[in-house]
Length: 393
Image (cartoon, rainbow, N blue to C red):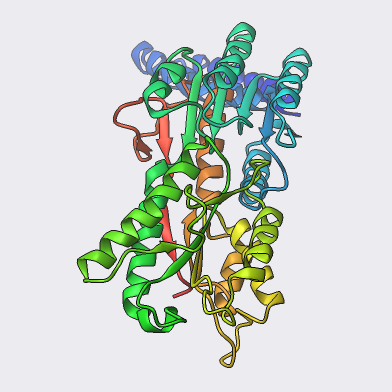
């Protein structure tokens, strides 16, 4: 359809040029020439617009998600589907199901079947080997590759990886920011509600921490700074630091061993924890910190099963904090079952990805026109989507 449109517009443009050359003989040659030049200029503009439209229709974008089961990633996928459809490009989604080998094979298939661009939510976050292998595949095919959400390498190695190919970019978040914001939120909440949270009245707040994935940069920083920054506020106010509920666990976190940041993993852990650590035994976990909202949901489900966090005034509510501000988490906060979360903007991320994809489909550099975004001061082809706090207010 767009190719027919291009042909029609081209014919119209040529006709406009011809008509411009057929001026009344009484007109001066200069006027006729000027009019012809103007017509030719306008015709060229229309032709270029038609070319751009045709280029977008010819785009074939392959989008790879580390797993469809991640609640936040599902939100990005829904928003990105809408944005890519609005652009008029052809696209195909792939569920890598938390398996890097599967994702690599999917990428090979997409390239062999004519993909003109790769958009990748990498499975093995933080792995130079995994990210560089994908970049090398894109480079060999001569097509752009855009990574998003999950870090490609350590902070020290990221610039080298992203700089290894001139048709490569990354859209994500400033990994430490979520941890700092969550820690600040927790610290403020505890200082405003300390006695109510301290269920056994021993003057110390006992906490549980649920980590989404070992080796994941975002998980590492969220786990670290959520506690460190909350402790800094507590100590500054003359309060003791948070105390991990299980003194035998020197890691001071429980991690999803499958790396899926899943509600199921957090629910299983919390259910087991509550069999030993509860209000009746006087050692109740008094606050729960989760790397994402999915894990927070799993924790709240386990608490609900034991009669906690039911959203009523006659039951004990254990403060639970997450990251992402998913619709489910917002509902839990609105129902009084969850305390707060850090918004990771799924729609904002999808809009940025689509903008860079449009650039690539139009034959531009992916980073063209991105000055309004928060571009890393150290890595020219990396964009940060900012976080925000959400407590339902």
